[in-house]
Length: 475
Image 1 (cartoon, rainbow, N blue to C red):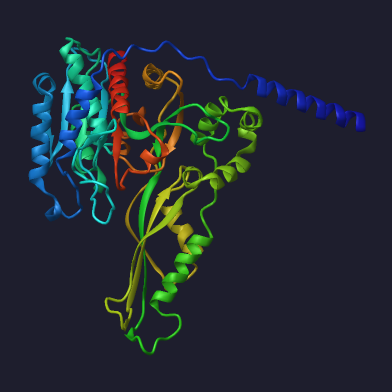
Image 2 (spheres, rainbow, N blue to C red):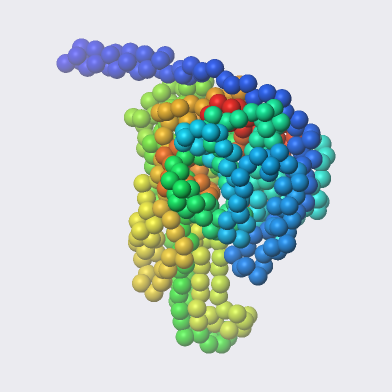
């Protein structure tokens, strides 16, 4: 028996060693040539658009429509060839949809971006948030990265290709949203317009991942993370009520106390960590670049899903968000006066729903964890996770080649986008919807999205333009 067990152990060790030896990067195909790019001139144009404060709001009265109109006028002035050659329509109150005709009936490529930005109030900027200042090789200002940088990179690619007399091999649509930051109607209107015309995109590309380094254990080189799907989003309101009264004579277990207890229970009992198929695919792809023991671990990722889920959950905030449904309490509200007991206490839980979960299952989890029938739950807004896009066909291969055309050392990998984007709407009409910003960004630069001192390097902008040129010419 001992001899048999020893033989089995030796065979298992040998099989494991063979798997690790075979766990190497897949060979890369030939990359398209992105052609010439004038990044400095593009940065000047981006700066001009950053200076226009296109701040979106869910309250229409808080939206400066004149600023949005000025942006559209400036865009037309900066890119005259694009606006002369492409068909253009304005959807709703400001979404832009362009069509670059090819003369082919092949399914089209859709390139997306949005030109609305989030507010700057309460943030400690070193400079005017809408200065559009160019200094130290960077374009500074709200929207430089999210998402006017991508919009300019797309427009620059189209403008420069038109200047060369290029005609795409398939129609190219540009869908530029004006209300992405408030989950608005622009992208749904674009999808409805394409659906009415019987258009089913060959591939769709919107904002999402980027080219990053130092974020994956054991891997030193750059990684281009391309979102195949995005988590669902749920705003769930938790409310408690009470009789109220004077704050000088409080009773235990009042509305605010019960709400606080519910919030703490949610913090103490998170959703379980799970390694879904997309994250497993990411581990399999990037893990092939890892060193030593990390590579041996990642080679057995499929058999070690629970362990790796726990490792990623504990690695960082970003790693935790990849492997579980997350709950963030973003708003708290109690009594309107300092000396009055609350008759109603309210919290908003912003929940990002992992693949495999739904709005319904997330609400039920919260209900179970809170375990208090006096805490009323109300879905304010919610959508399930998006479908997962394909990686077994030419659109994905082209995205990978276009990345390597400008980032030849980067490993291109699928991932799950933990934020929400307009791309989720296009999943209704295409099985090839990808989420990627073609910029190499440091952790510090990534942290400026929706925060102070947002900026984008001129060099990264130039590489982004090259990416879109390679994508369009290769489609």
